[in-house]
Image (cartoon, rainbow, N blue to C red; front, top):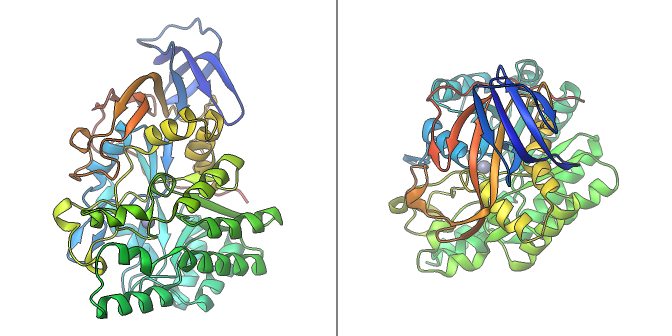
Length: 450
Ligand SMILES: [Zn+2]
């Protein structure tokens, strides 16, 4: 063995047990109550949880917005991820005007390859509603991109329902999963225009132009479309309780509708927009109400929500200012995903340790076809985290590795601490210190099982 972790408490979606875990050649080789092998590196895990590394299936590194970019590029973003216990991420390669999806992927790979410090892939972002795009879908599946993202909002990104139906049909035929950013674009634009023309541009009008019904209407509509075609569907960053009701109802009927939510929808509400610096919390879908937050936690605990991911897309403080409709959308979170979900979820007894592993590792790998990832099993990549539940801490942006200069969770108290992050058998972070290397992340072609 190259590395052995002794006496840690291993967590899988169904079990919790104390064991030794042995690694060689970047893979998990053995799990046993006592491994007699020797190894040059022995890590004592007594008193700690050993979890599969988190897989953040929703990041936006180096995302253009107006005349700026999100604060983290693929290097700084992946360093932040690694220090927070994330061992793989899926970002987006979104078509620009006149671009094919293949061209969008090639240009995103140029930005990520040689930079990312942990393994990564891309969802194919479809914005160009034409025959050529539809014809690309089988090739995307073949080339390892079996997940698509479409938008029902944003004037420059959204597609019509008619085109979405065609994509759902083509994706079902080709074995791809369609994921949707579901908000009613027409309503948002009408409400925004009304507020902006009336001079109502304080941050709260961001929320008032994207309230819960704007999301739940679009979620319910898209779910109906997927049901009609019996096509699988993934709802990105679900924020509203009513949206979750629509997803849960379809699931109860046996339809393969899957949902993701994000830590900020579980932990923050639209009250934040009333703060003097409320612009900092402008993101879409907007933060919702206390009742939505409570509904999302219930859905997470009972299995109606499959995945928690971050939508990590922070902008610098100096950019998060001005009238609500001009503030770049997005907040950070890749470094605090696992710490927050452990502290607020497991330590506060809202979800079990098994559920934590399920929504951060096992389901992301299964749904998006990351074959070697997401499980503690011999033969899988040795991507794991040691979490020490005995250490308390506090979130401070100044101590994080993201290039962003603020955190939506500044000062937030944490139970538990990420002690160690291991990526393909190598320690890449220890107690908040990055120990990996630029470019050590590998591109992951993906394959969804039908
Ligand atoms: Zn996003």
